[in-house]
Length: 87
Image 1: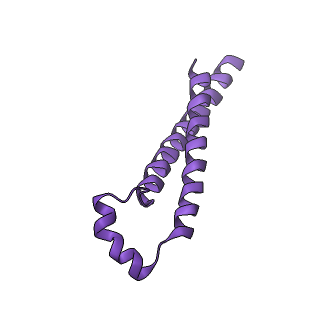
Image 2: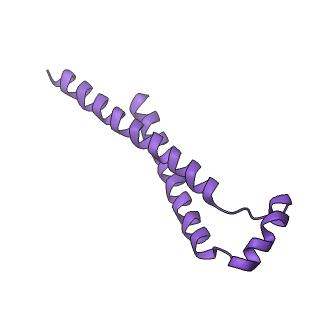
C-alpha cells in the first residue's frame, strides 16, 4: 500500500519535472537565439548600418541575458533532480 503510493508520487513528480525540464530547455534555446551577437563579423557588417540608424537594443539584450541565465540554472536543477529521482 505505502509502496504503491510512493511509486505514484514518484511517477507524478517525474512527469512534472520532465515537462519543466523540456520547457526550460526551450526557454534557453529561444532566449539565446534572440540575443544579438557579441562579435561584429559578417552579420555585424550587414546590420551595422541598421544599428546606427535605429540604435542598439541594449536593454533587451540585458533582459534576455538574465532570462537565459535563469533558464539555464533551472534546466541544470531539473536535470539534477531527475537524475536523483531516477537513480
